[in-house]
Amino acid sequence: MGESERGERVSFAKNLKKAMDERNMTQSELAKRIDKGKSSISQYLSGKNIPKDDVKQKIADALDCTVEYLDSEVHEKDTGSGIRNISVAEAARRLGKSQQYIRAGLQNQRLPFGTAVFVKRWSYHISPKLLDEYIGKDTNENK
Image (cartoon, rainbow, N blue to C red; front, side, top):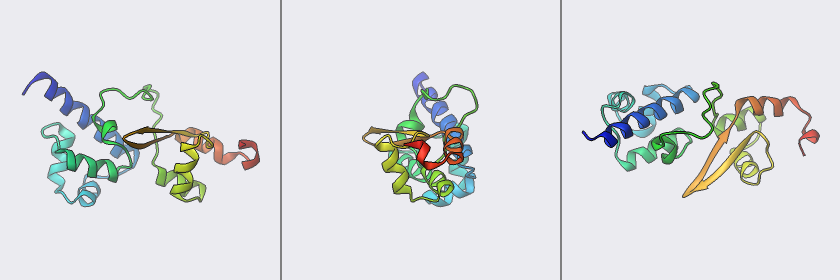
């Protein structure tokens, strides 16, 4: 195995674990969502194997992130501060709004608790701390 392939496996494994932790998703839950065995997820997490592109896309969809996020070596928002992104679904649940409302608000930069980035497809980054602050405010203050 070449140096870059080993690095790719380590990055993917680390990012997969982070995304699963942020969404409180178990190996079994992810395996069920992408129609794979739990042992496959375990191998991806250990860096022993890396999934094919079509499986990476299924994983990204299940985790509400992008393949680029899973493959990247460094995340610009990962400051080591322990702040994690939350999913669009979780933000929608907390606000009592639809997922489409959250996506549109982030894309149009109307919601101050996250960002939307377009690279081949939309990717959403939502700060739980900023969302909690937003929820605590009167909605008229957020305009």
